[in-house]
Image (cartoon, rainbow, N blue to C red; front, side):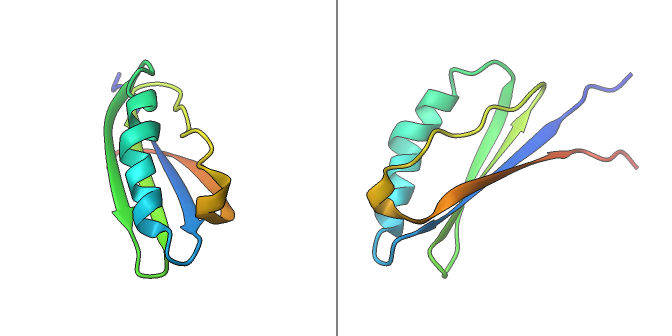
Length: 88
């Protein structure tokens, strides 16, 4: 039986001019906190031209989502989705 891998995609839209600060918060606060969770395999951070910040984490069990970002940095509340890897 193959191990189950779950990807969590967390997405938030930054306030205009706040994307750099939001990315900094992800790296300095959210990811260090998340790194303490059991089952985290990897995390990747992406930034879009439209002020979106996306964090994708891979888990070997139930995923844990990122904590709420500082309210003053976000234009819309974060959204989070889980995806299960499909074997070919």
